[in-house]
Image (cartoon, rainbow, N blue to C red; front, side, top):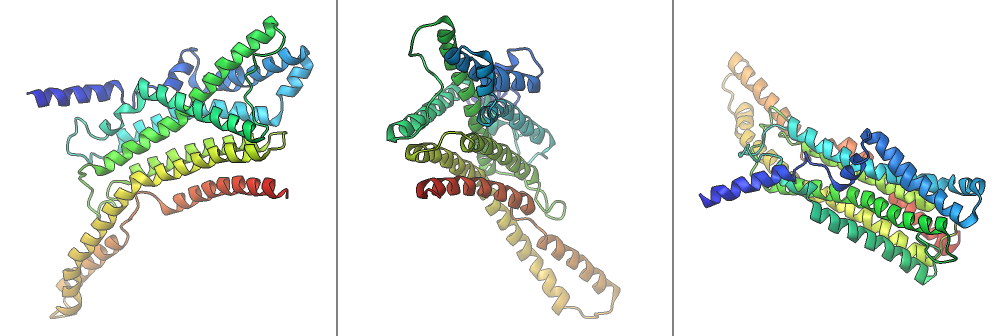
Length: 368
């Protein structure tokens, strides 16, 4: 009885913190009572992007035209687009998870828990707050290390100087803006991490795979498609972050290369690791199923090629046709739960982002 109560409590907790519940970044945007996409643009791109930058420049120069001119630069536009994208991405990834949950055939025996339970912690508040603080600390560490080693990187928070009401408000709003921006950025990493780890837990569960003659992916293709979608969104986030760094008008110094470049490379390695971690186990299971089907088919192939008493009879021809069809089905069985062509395109994107970053670092080091 006690075990049943614990299971019921686990299911209730899964529903309370499951993929149907919004992440912290989504709750923040929803609090403004705007359509979500519009809220991401107005709040992320506008309020905590361009407006924050314009307010800082206005407090420094006290000249509105100059402040607007300094704000509308390529780097500031890219950074603002990054914040808006980071607010929208967690919702998009979570909805893709919900779509997969509703469209995936039941591969797990316990339908009351089913596919949703491994993802129950995606909306848990405490780990999201911890991830938020950790991301902010890592970002500030990278920036401060860059400045300490001799780089030019610096945060936009500036409280020093002569006191003025506008300057004080700009500095205070800068702190709020930094907190909101890092909430969005950390939420992308958190959502990607949580869902991929959920896929990893799902891959460890006993699964009732589809027969290979019904589905060459054994019913696992929705999982692979979800993983590819998540990786595409995550590396799109990395690409925007890299763009905002590369188009900076300042000449990066050694500290920038070591700290900010290392931070970006860490995010890339983290994304690649999380992509392959949950799918490797599914790959092994699919390879095992293909080998099992091949071994089961061998006696029938042997009977067709060696045991036909009357090669021209209708029974032998019919059996040969059926065995040939099964042989084709086995040969077409996938060993990864996704389309290899799609993975190739994703790999090109990830490799391109990494190559651009490395080439930039090499060019700066050797002054090319």
